[in-house]
Structures are given as C-alpha cells and as structure tokens.
Amino acid sequence: MITLKEKIGYGFGDAASSMFWKIFGMYSLFFYTDVFGITAAAAGTMFLIARLWDSFFDLFVGIMSDRTKTRWGKYRPYLLWFAIPFAVMGVITFFTPDFGQTGKLVYAYVTYSLMMIVYSLINVPYASLLGVISPDPRERNTLSSYRMSFAFIGSFITFMLLQPLIDFFSKQFGREETLLASQLADGSVSTNPVGWVMGVGAIGVICVVLFLLCFSWTRERVKQIESEEQVSVKQDLKNLFHNAPWWILVGTGLAALLFNAIRDSVAIYYFRDYVQINYRMAGTGWDMTTIYFLVGQAANLLGVMVAPPLSARFGKRRTYMIAILMAGVLSTGFYFIPNNIGWILIFQFFISIFAGYVLPLLWSMFSDIVDHQELTTGRRASGLIFSSSSMSQKLGWALGAALSGWVLAYFKYAPDALQQSAKTIQGEHLMISLLPAVCCLLAFIGMYFYPLSDKKVKQNYQQLEEKRAATQVK
Image (cartoon, rainbow, N blue to C red; front, side, top):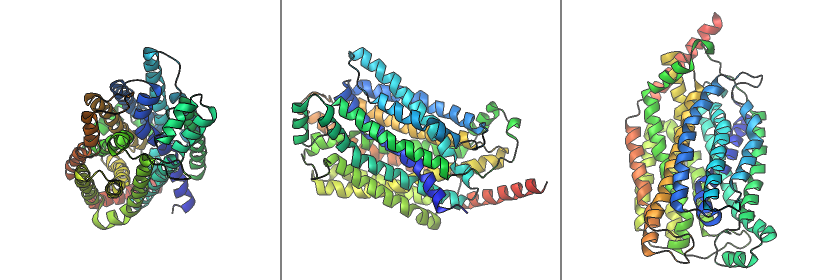
C-alpha cells in the first residue's frame, strides 16, 4: 500500500520539472525573440535541432538508469545528483550575454542544449520511478494522477510567480527604468534581461527543494525477474523497437503534446497582438496572458482529478479518445468565437479540462507497456520505456516550438514593431485554434489503433504477479 506521503513526494518531482518546463514551453519563444534578440525563425530552428537530438539522448539515459545500482535504487539517485545542476543550468540558459547576433545564436544553442540534457538526466529516471514504486496498475494510475496533479500545481505556481518576479527584479536591478515603466503601463511582461535571469533563478530554488523531497519520500519496490546482465543494450533496443503498442503510444503522445506546445507558445503574442487588452490584476502583477494560463492550469488540474474515476469506469483508451476529440472540437470552435475575453477564457477552461484528462492517462499507459514488454520478452526495461515518454514529450514540444517560430516568421512577425500586420495577427489566431485541432485529430486516430485494452492490461498484471510469486518460491 502506497502512503499518502509517498504519493505527494512522487508528485513533487513533476511539480519541479513542470515549473521549468512551462517556462520553456510558454515563455521561451517570447524570451528569445523579444528579450534575447534573435529572430523567430532562428529560435524555432534552434528548438527543433536542440530538442531533436536530445530526445534520442533520453533513450541513452533510460538505458543508463536501468543499469544503475546504488543503495538508493536505480532511479531515485538521479533526483539527488542533478537537482542543483538543473536550477543552475536554467539560470545560465536565460542569461542574455552582450554578444552580436552570431555569438548570441551560438550561446543559445549551447546553453539550451545543455539545459535539455540536464532535464533528461533528472526527468527520465523520475518518470521511470512510476514503474518500480508499485506493481499494481491501479496504484500506478493513482500515482500518475498525483504526478500530473502536482505537475499542474507546479505550472500554476510558475504562472503566479514568474511575471511578478521578472517585473520586480527588472525594477530593482534593471537599468532601463523608462522602458520598463512603459511596458508595465501597457500590461505586457517586462523584456528586461536582468529580470528574466533572476526570476528564473528564484523558480529554480523552489525546484531544487521539491526534487530533494521527492528523492527522500519515495521508495523503489518492484524488482526485475530476470538478471539484468543477461540482456544487452542491443537486445533491449530490439525489444523496444518491436513493441507495436509502444510505437502507437509514442506517436499519439507526440500529437497530443504538439497540441499543447503550439497553443502555449503563441499565447503571449495572441493576447498582445490580437486580443489587445492592456490589463493587470491589482495586487498581483498578472496580465491577461498570465490569467489565461492560470485558468488553463486550474482546468487542467480539474481534468487530472476527474481522469482516474472516468478511466476506471470507461477504460483508459476510451476516455483518452473522448477527451482528445473534445479538445479538438473546442479548439476548432475557438477560431470562430468573438474577440471577447469572456468567450476566450470560457473556451480555454473547457479545452484545458479535456487536455487535463489526456496526460495522466498517457503516462499511465507507458507503465502498462513496461508490463507488456516484460511479459513478452522477460525484460523489465522501465528506464528505457519511460525515457520514450520523455522523448515523445520533447519531440512534441520541439516540433511545436519550431513550428510556432516558423509560422510566425512565415506570417512576417517583427519583434521590434509597435503594431503587427493583419497577416501576422491572423497567423497567431490560426496557431491558437485550428492548428492545434489538427493535432487532436492525429492523436485520436493513433489511439484508435492502440491494442492494450484495460482487460489486456489486467491480464498482463496477473500473469506477472504469478511469475514473481513463482520466482520467490524458488
């Protein structure tokens, strides 16, 4: 029986990861174009290249963590080893050096790539913990829901704190007070580089504490039936690449994350250029973009909380298909609603509820694939398989961020312009509505062909438990 403390401790790990992941997913394109000072097309290409190769680095981390042996287990030690490098690398990534365009681009490529490497070294083993904390699919489903609930709580905290922190540090330590005053007056986030690096640093400190608590409060219980030394890395990879459900889930997850990445990346531009409401909530420093994000995170959290009972009643696969289909339908409707903040927030709320259903089900399904592969091959390669969940996540965000940058460039986005063209604004409107809807359709089609029904998952669990019991008797 997993205690409440351990469930919360496991959730803390994704709270920490998500606090930084949301900064990269929702603010990094804006940072690189309007603060750091490179073009949208250059930033988009960098996101794709850096995250593309790093996505495959996740497989290496999975293989390495599967073969790690310490007194703390296989996967937990990485939370201890890389908590501080995680925060430090985030600060370095959001530092703006006084370089020319070429120097800045090189600095961006190097630091962003290193940040993604450190993220892999802590997040892949963290995700793999789900497969070894408990062998019971129902408990893993609960743990997955705790993970996603705390992920959205972490994201919520980031949205509440980041903009006020950036503005505070910009005001305290920045040298462009006149420019800052005008930015604060028109309701937009500060573009002062000092505010950004110190704001991210403050979030990083919170991340370190949460990772260390996750390390301290969790335990690894599930043991490999077969000796690890009997299976080579080559065989592990061969087993994985012959796993049809894995291929389908990676593709489906990629489409679902692409949906989130495109909507999130363009939100700042959409509100500033299309909605054009210059408003800050009194006493918080939040502009309309931050409020939009906060509404989405609150709705995501509600969706995560509802996902376990719905999936228990209707099955993971069916619940996933309904949720992703409704997210796509509502995203299509988002294109046709009036330019009115009430309508925008209502649609954001309901789109985000259905998006919140999807993610915990997705990660829980990866743990089912671990069981499926162990039953068919005799090898429980949790780290390798869960690294593929991180790989699909990064590929989704990489393609989403790259596509966002390229589409902005295609629609002639100009970072220094006081007013964007009608063509640019129309492109931003498409990017937050119809383009994500296409991603939902692709995810729905992928899940339609997913073969691991709830009945099959339960059968796999029972057969593995019988094998483990027989091994213990011997």
